[in-house]
Image: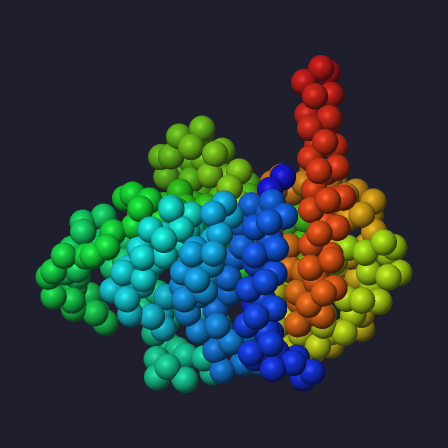
Length: 351
C-alpha cells in the first residue's frame, strides 16, 4: 500500500489562519521527510473549515521545498478557475517540482463558494467539463486557442508546458455518485474517493469502474493498472493506545463534523451523531499501531484499494500531535503493514 496526507487548512476557533498556513506547510514537509508517497491539497474559500482558494499556489511553494514527494490537488474546483491560468500555473508548478504534480479535478459542491467568485452554481456541470477540456487541449497542443460556451480564448503559444507530457497525471474526484465513476472509467482516468463510502460500496465502485472501462474498449491490462491507482481519503490518528488516540482526535473531528455540509460531502450521516458513531464508522481509523495495522490490512483485502490518503489533521488538530501521529504511522504502521500484505501475497502464491 501507498500512503498520502490530506491538507484542508481548517481554522478552528483557537487558531488564526496565519498559524494554519505555517503548521500545514510544516506537516507537508514532514510527510516528505517521513516517506509518504503524496500530499493532497484541498481547495475551499470563505469557509473556516478550509481557506486555500487555489491549491496550485501551495503546490508551487511545496515543489520548491521538496525533492521526492508527489504533489496532488484534491481538488482543483474547475468551474471557478480560468482554464488558461490553470494550464499555465500547473505547468509552472510541475516544472519546478521536476514532474511531481498530479492534477485532481472536481466540480466543487459549495454554492456559497461559487457565489463569492460570482460564478453561477447552476452552470457548474457545463463549466467544469469545458474547463477540463480546455486545459487538456492547451497542454496537448501547446496553443492557447479554445472555443466553448464560457471561454473563447485567442491563439498564442502556451508557455510553459508541463514537464510531464502530454498532460499531467489526472485524477477524478468521486464522492458518493456513481456518475463520476462512470465518467472517469469511460476515459480511463484514475479516481480519488471520499472517506464516506463503506467497504462494500468501495468494492462495488471499483467493479463498476472496471466493467465500464472494458465496455468502452479499454484493454483489461490497462484497466487493472488504472484501478490500482485508486486513492481513498480516510481520517486517521495513531497514538500509543486506542484510548489516547480517541481522546486526542475528538475535539478537531467533532468540530469539523458538526457542519451538516461537511458530513454530507464526506459521506457520513446527515443527522448529528455523537463521537462514538465516527469511531466505529469504517471510514475513520483511530487507535494504537497494532489496531491501525490490522484495520488497514482488512480494508485492503475487502476493498481492493491500495492507496490511502491519511487525513491526520481533521478540524485543525494540534500541530505537535499531528506530526507525532504522522511519525508513528510512518515508523510503526506503514512498514509493518507492507510486510503483512507482502506475506499474504507470498502465501497466496504458494497455495
